[in-house]
Image (cartoon, rainbow, N blue to C red; front, side, top):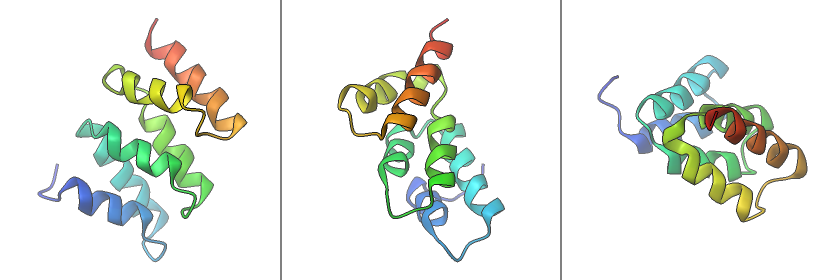
Length: 95
């Protein structure tokens, strides 16, 4: 992990001028750092492309992010497709 802060990774992930690879790398750095709240914020951010919102949702597929992911599902803040995928992710991490 580099010396970047979670905020810098979020900035990179939401930067439309950054390369796709850099944006995905930033999302995975947030996953590695267990930054579940930041990943959830990306999932809910309709200002970024759906591809990166989905990438952040998939990155939340760790037991450490279960509570945050459950919050997103319970609050009904996701569109139906993303909510369905979030439920699948939760089911898979709790097995």
